[in-house]
Figure 1 (cartoon, rainbow, N blue to C red):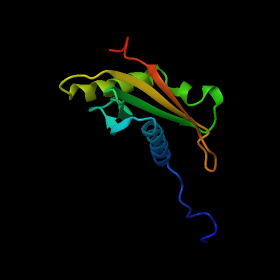
Figure 2 (cartoon, one colour; figure 1 turned 90 degrees about the vertical axis):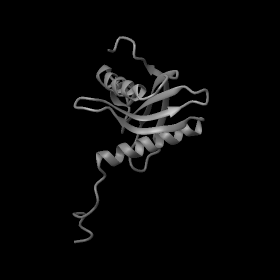
Figure 3 (cartoon, helix red, strand yellow; figure 1 turned 180 degrees about the horizontal axis):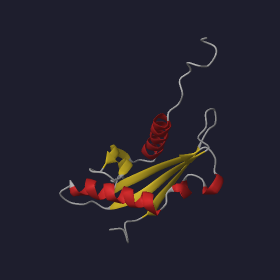
Length: 137
């Protein structure tokens, strides 16, 4: 039965997400950013998560949402970061910043990965300042 495919390991959503975050992190580090934290979660139910927290050489703290899609239909990965997702990322970022003595300059970026399929080279797009915390409380 070894060749029947019944015991082949499936790729989980978590594994796919981790691979996307690894790809995004490598892309940002190649551009000069340094990793501060991965998968920072705010406490409590209904909180948020920041996929990557990076630091620019000038000290700017960058909160990064990583999104990936197998195809660019319906606007692709970047279009999937709606207001509800932005609100959750901002919520988590505020919790992270509350732990710091002083707040550095901050920014919210999105790394959109389209065409993320086995055997295909994905497209990676880095959107600096993709959204801001204005209007979210």
